[in-house]
Length: 329
Image (cartoon, rainbow, N blue to C red; front, side, top):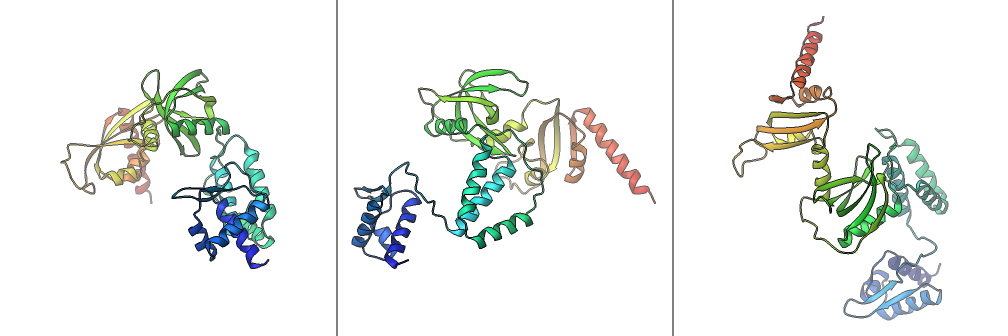
């Protein structure tokens, strides 16, 4: 490949990465003068590549919006990164309902990989192990995901057809603040326009979404991720648990994360060092209590169970079993 031809292809790759590139930037990246950049652009246009000229102070060149450039130009490292991302996304369940989309995308990229890179990728995948089982979560419809994302970006209300965990169907209007990926599932969180309450919905349970006229002002805080986690911690379950634990927030969060429990300080002075151990109020809700005694034992901090009494009985029973095991010869 001649040097000018190689520079033209490099220019094409720079434009393909998106945005408007100034003549000065392109000249610097290609190691040529500005007039040479313009000549290279003319060559791309002659080849049918729709390069647009952008005028103004921050003008330059860009590819026409929506143009699909054949062939896809990826370096070996970029192709490997994309393939590993597709593998990880499928494993975690963070894909759309179009399962074949990630598979066909992987196949297309693998087909154009140099043989030695493909062999190294296969070797990596054979050596790669996961500590968890493959995700078998319900995945959202791609069109629903994109529609809600657009509503979030432009602060527009969105109408949802939703089915809850009990199979009840409803239509809702949501002021969506953000989309959150958590533990292998997609969620949208925002304010229910009818009730005025904050709500979080699983995207795989949304059958249809469409944006509505109007707009709303999204709050600056808490963030969508914080809203989802706090919603999990306060969701309605069979048991309401209230504890007082002596320690730091970090010590407690290591065993009871924000998605499980809420932590509130008990009469601490303003500006007190968060690393200082003190009594903290911990609240959580759970369908079952049998997992909590081992967690409290692993936490290894002084604690008081305010309720329920059933949890206190389970902790005492665990302590008796451990004591009996320790006395065995």
